[in-house]
Length: 75
Image 1 (cartoon, helix red, strand yellow):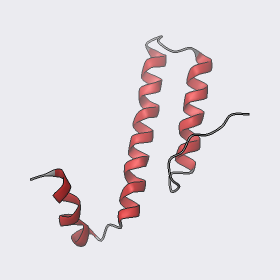
Image 2 (spheres, helix red, strand yellow):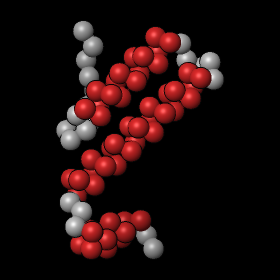
Image 3 (cartoon, one colour):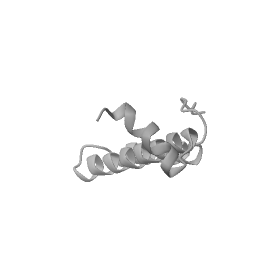
Image 4 (cartoon, helix red, strand yellow):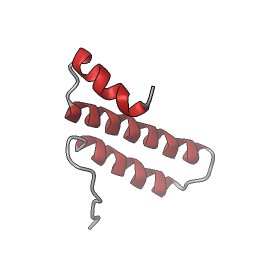
């Protein structure tokens, strides 16, 4: 079964809205990304300032996961 056919097939059965699905996918991606950052930090491949900046960035993205993904400016 092709991956493209999975969502439409189950969408009616599970009553999944396309927007809700997109938000769930973003949330899973962002939490996985945050875990990856922590893994690199624990392995000594990232400085403390870097992990703080990156995890704050992910937290900010999670706070706005209903919005379109965009770059954030730091002032």
